[in-house]
Length: 157
Length: 150
Image (cartoon, rainbow over all chains, first blue to last red; front, side, top):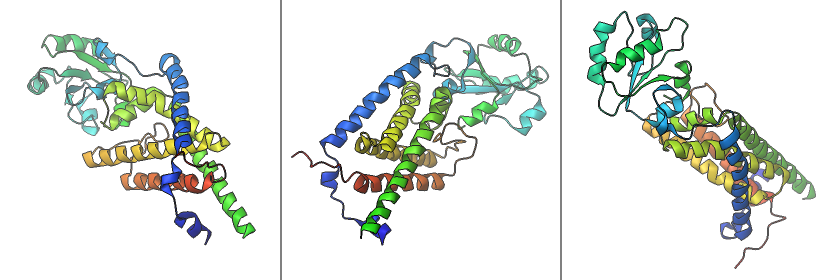
């Protein structure tokens, strides 16, 4: 009976949202701006505000996400690790299989693509040596994903 | 009749504390790490990077303030309106991700969690929450409601 009264009460929607409601909603929105601005400037885990100005080097997964599909992923771990799990669309490339796999990587690359290397395990390939080696193939800008690659899966990919 | 009114009042108070507390928790969980929340926002593939970053720093504070004002009863009707709009946007974002076939690891509702998103469940949760907000809007502040300006 009570629930029926609660849910089926005739509602005068025209009178529900009036000037004071909108005004208080607006003030709450304005109030929230103040701590949000402080967060944007001072928070230790604040987002990076200039992703376009990031030079080659370490890059956050949030920035890679903003690049959409124009990313060429390279997985430098061992083939067995790659077979166990990897970022979809990534290429397994390390010193052992370089000559076999580099052609697939070069075929997949298109102008405007950014190359991102991910790893994070203990027995990882030397990132920077790999970056130097890839640079000789003119693969555009080359980045290294910050943190373990499993962090990428937490971003929703 | 009087007893009925008392039970109704208690029920509304409980709904109010639940909804307010839930949004405070949701806000705080996201405020702890805005960059992680940005990752989740980007996962929906709805907003460009900078818009996503603004949402990641602003939205948690709005949730926290609205939850707080609902709990303490200051600007509560405005808070309810904001929460209703936010819930509508959340539901739209989840439906959009579902339609695009994106398998989100976290919906980002309470910060970053690593449980796979069950879309129908989330939509149902949001609808229930929106219903609670609606019930509060209709009944919760009826004593303080003023006449609309004509």
